[in-house]
Image (cartoon, each protein chain N blue to C red):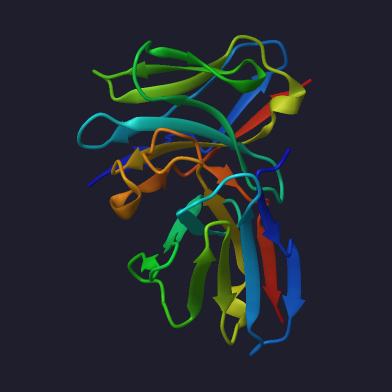
Length: 117
Length: 116
């Protein structure tokens, strides 16, 4: 069964709305979670690394004020797309690993398809 | 720069034939390599990994991959393709060993299409 749960799976909203996406590790604690963005027929682009209890690490070119990340507990990270516009429409995916040493695979949520009208 | 390359956007194979999806990497040090599969509107599912040890690793759904250090490759293979193998496949490398400086780099993806 799924070990990382992402919610919601689909969001359609008006331009200017803020949207929150949740990523939960279901049966393990994750000090680190990753947030990705995927455009149609393209690879995953790492947006940021979510660190429990501290600030997220954003990749170059990702607006931290636009994409707010909160990792308040060891099982939950949230991504908030603030004042979303049509260009923010995309497929957002989170991932987490049982082990932060790097030799374990990432478990991915099923993604959130965000459509901004 | 550290990178992962999947040179083929699409691979087409007849059902029952062997398949290969290519991946090459460029990283410093010993790589942690992974293959993932993505079905439409879903997240990625782990197939297999190479950390250390035998160069041939076996994974889920009958897939295997061969780590070749001299060629810096990690090609995904399956002896006999199934129509249900049709999906998008990503090669990935973990850079950095610990969470504070670690992230995953994905290849551009290869769409595998198996015809009946």
